[in-house]
Each structure stands twice: as C-alpha cells, then as structure tokens.
View 1: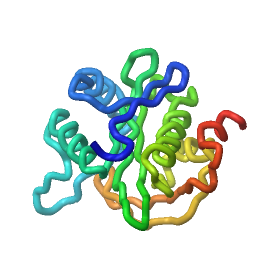
View 2: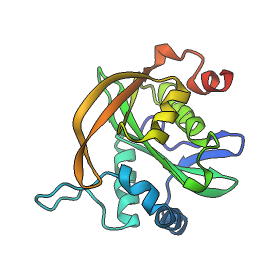
View 3: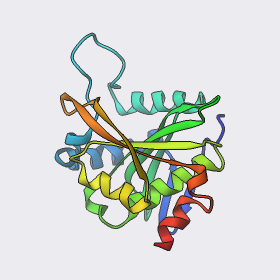
View 4: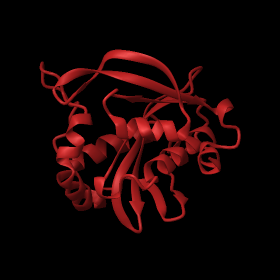
Length: 198
C-alpha cells in the first residue's frame, strides 16, 4: 500500500477511516438530505466530451478512490461521529518527488456542522500527511462565497497564499478560488495541537 495509507485517525468521538463500499447507504442518505446545502460547492463536469471525471455510482467512486489511494495519489477518509457517517475529507493530487505536496477537500452533514468537527478532522488529516505520509505542504482551495469552508481554514490558522480565477468547474460554471496552505515547518507541534490550544 501507499505511504500513510490505509489509516485510521481518532480524536475523542471523531473517527476518520478509509471510505468503504459499506458506507454506501449512509453516504447516499447524507448526500441526498444535504443536496441543497452542498450543491453550490460541489465540483461539476464542464460541457464537452464525455469523460470519467464523474463516477456513475457510489461503487465506481469508491473504486476510483481506492485505485488512487493504492497508487499513492489520494487518501479518501470517511468521517464518523458516534459511529455515524457524517462526511468526508479527501487528500487529493498527492505529488511526491521534490514537491511532497497535496490538496484537501471536505464536506460534512449540515446536521452536525458548527460543532468544530471539520476543523478537528482536517487538522488530524494534515497532521497525518506531515508525519506518517511524509508530505511537506498541504493546500485547501475554497470559493470566496463559501463562508463555512473559509471558517474552517480560519480556525486552523492557515494562511492565504493566492487567488485562482476560474480554478474549478463547480455548480455549472468555472469558479474562482482562494488558496490556503500550510507547511510542516509552520506546525512543528502539529495542527491539531495548535487548534486545541487556541
């Protein structure tokens, strides 16, 4: 398996573990219940030739993510609280060699948002990226209008490093993104420790 994967990360009642085929029913229920809340921030496939960019089913999504994880290009974590599936944090675009870099995307059930779960989950994942997986830099790209995601990086103390016009196709159009990043040198004691000390 790839460096740092599979992994199980915990903090109190919060568990992050590999996304599994067995999550299908809970994943679908949470996604359907939160469709209106999430669709403004979800990547969409731009018009043009048909590609495999959007898996046709949950099974296809998990298979694709497992392949990327096995190849060391991704780490797809399910988020559990109290034994219940509530969201996902995915480390994407892992680049090795001289970069040792990755990006992170995340979403959570609106029913449990605002409780500090996502900042803790992202901090756990970034700490894992820096320690076990040996990465040097992690970035998070967020639409300027996505105040909930911006609050996560604010709580984590990530610095804004750039602005990417028309960066990703989301909700039917090319959307601008603010770019936040952190390097291992900035959090020598770990990002979770820094979050909890504030």
